[in-house]
Image (cartoon, rainbow, N blue to C red):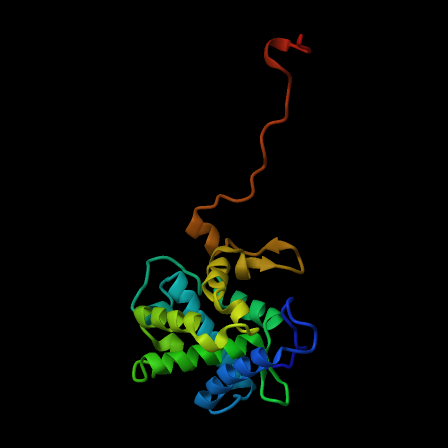
Length: 227
């Protein structure tokens, strides 16, 4: 994936992690890299990341998309995948959460680091089920198996006091936000919606209110009151 500048959590001095945090982060993400066979090339990384977080979006807000079908939990309406929730998670993690691996300070974009972690935990939960149409094993799991992956990821002791832990509890929140926001329907350059956002349909939101009628006077024509 394209290289990005390393960002740091607000509680960490720019450019460094404490030794415990550094070693713990390196151990967790480094282990995921071992499972994945090292850092993937750009095309493989893009597929791994998109499949992983589309799988997460389908878990949080199922629809009738292929990711929801694969997990065995679907609905008859569009869901998080259709609203670009996976892309919202990817962009947020890439901008906010870096991962540092090894003493050479190899910087891994946040979304790729988490995609590798999801894949690693998916393989530990169900090695056979993780084989499927999607490049990220997490996206090939059932809904219940995805739930187990997220529980294990959230409770993993090596993630404590590291940069990784700042987003560990936020994955589901970010996916939910992405499912109900304007998502891919918003054209930032034109500052307008290009289509009806899926999230508006899901929440039955009727659009921006024009407000209430302007004040046209007081009851009975009164213009003042006595104290």
